[in-house]
Length: 256
Length: 384
Image (cartoon, rainbow over all chains, first blue to last red; front, side):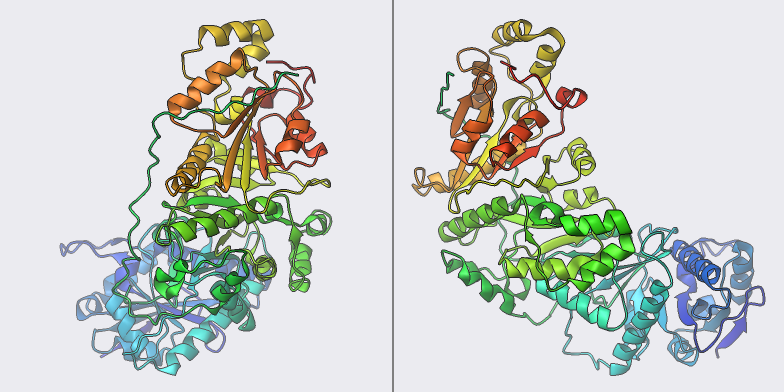
């Protein structure tokens, strides 16, 4: 059974316009040992949450009536976490995180939960979780485990088209991807070129300059203006990812 | 004017660290479709069609060397192409207007900049290398590394297409420092119009030089790459130059004589000369010494009979061959460079850079060493 709880400490966002980002509790908090310790450590997703919060703050600075904001939902994806609901809530308050809602679900119904909450992007550190959600049409991405900036939200688009013959490849997932990209693009437009709290980065790993050019044009046609572009043409990706420090990678092959 | 072109006989070859030329990339876990990149067909318009090239299939069916195996030359957009008009828009009207202008003119290719002939010559060498060693990754790899925003990306790609350049790798950092990316590319040489970035690269141990647009450009060879280097503070350290500046010419001569058998310390461009030498040997190995499409020159104010000896001994000890060493004994470098017609000439002193440019040679400034602390316009009768 899923229970969804609103965080009364945080102003709720406009359901129609907000960009709903769901993050797993295991990424948000480092739940540590089972010794009943009340305060959790900070998880991998902390810089992400701070960056999302900063984008919201800047959006509201530009326009106090802004409704295109990030709406962050914390979701549990296994029963063990599901049972930690009160501790999760208290820790959220303790750290002052801008989380609007909690979805306490288990491994059986978290995807359902994502769908009913109209989640635009699901972020997890667990590859198989993200792949499962993706298969069911929820746009998903892996959180970057390495240190990412908390100053600026850095979103990395992987420009290579990966064709996986075995996937049902629901076009719902592709639609979700495009819809999220368009929202992100629109948000980016709210800021100028310099000092933006959000940066959109494109990386093409395979293929030459034409594949990058095509990706740039495609993104542009969807209203996404790319800030930084890297065409690797076969060079190993990890040195570049270390420099780029994205919070998450979109359209990345989840079976990497 | 005594000029002694001297052939330097090389001793033992200094081994460059080069990874094994592995066959294909180890990404076997991905089952993506190999897409044949039709764009590569455009390359058959090059002077010598290379048939062996497509026998190497890396992902996507296109051949890309591993960065550590190739001799990577990173160029910025402002030296590869002419962007003065756009620069003016940027300076006078700000970045937003600059990008709007770029997008508006997206389908107008830029015209060639100071590094363009050099890059074309690198590609000509690659053609010859591929003929002889179709499986090898030991090639020049040209990467566009620019501070520019990705908004300019499409115009840059259109321009590369227009000029038929083989540049498949780039970084458009949107304002972030490019230095980290230079390292990620295992850059052997970085060319930029921005002296600060060049200095930063040098301080990180990457060979780098600043290039300038010049109105007069003499024609250079399309089939043979010619690279010319100054000696002190370019190939060698600036230790001797320091003596000269602090204590004058006589002390300099004395010092060089006394230390004739002591090797000079290396300078920022030594590694690049080494990389060129390594590629040259690949031609020699196939009996193409006379016809080698790479030729290197030392153009130094040192004098052959005296201070030049230490320079030659140092090169020999390093196992570096240089095809022609020109000891000018203080004479102006411009006329000699005009005879050589290098695609690029590296010097640490702006005085020489300007002198070269006046005569139509593309000269690149290496902002290294003691000369940077002095006025750019030196005493023209400097004799070493």
